[in-house]
Image (cartoon, rainbow, N blue to C red):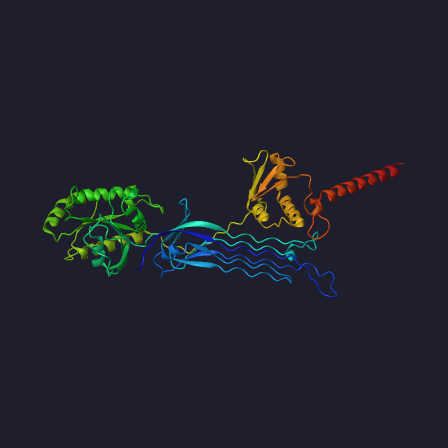
Length: 481
């Protein structure tokens, strides 16, 4: 038996980027072939795509995890790794994407609409792309970035023009069945309707859809009954219709109190897409007037409802009395709503390039480490993820990039002292401001090493620098004499 599912929680994971390759071209009679490591491929995205042939989120109920393929690593001979394939997940029109905290990320309306739920990681650069004047043959490559992972809540909100609301057994499903070709389940007991039913109605040249949701009871907006689970399906409706049972014999029930209760629930419910339900155009349908007592009661309450500014229609789904007039009244209301909408404008892409001198990072004090600092920013955190910390030359390259970005100066301005812990992304290290950085501090050495990270080599370099300084002073003194 098929099931209707309109709310699911899914876990999506994009593909990881492939690692770059550190390779040196080796060929007979070509001793200095140079670096030829290729770049890693980009990881695949997880994309939600609206498919007009899908009407429920049932597939995600059974398969709540989705992962895109990862990019392939680069290879020698300047061969780049293959890109991971995007994973497209088909969702019905009207799907709203939210975070677990309730923040709306996307409202997917229109066939073919796409939303990148998780972005794939960038591939790492190979040493061929990292070669420069100072690093002619890099002995390292950048790692691929991990793909984005996140938990998402998918909610289906029906795309209907008219929403029918009312107490259980008020005749909403019967009304949908006589207005359209839909055949919902109809029975003489409460909560017969357990899932929303949609029907297509034609009124002259106007074609519109009608949604029937499970019956509401007092307190539905706070979770009582089934109302809270399905009120979301009338959020998009342009017109709301109160379907009132005039033939009910339930104690304490009458058409006026039913309408008042429904109005309170609509006013208390807060749609996630904005726009209060109580502000929508509303009609009242007094149903079951084929029963003599119900007809008499409808004639009594009709003037009172009219004084409230609510258009009233008395109908019978058994004899079809009043249905034609109701159909055209709904068509007129829908047509007026559509006419009030602003004309559709072509989609415009707005490009906001980042300023050339935009550093894109900030330095703050670390509340968990005394005297420590945290560097936050897209570029520094991405560079840390791409660094192989088992390779000293790669660490030196990271230090150069951070220094050129201005991280060293920002730490010094923030009051950082030598040896204080500095955290960037998932890595914490002891800051040494005396470590020279930048292109001027780089010199040739064994591939995969960096002389600045070797204490003995740094001491030897300091001694050689002092010796050169002493020789220059001695030469200057000799010229004076």
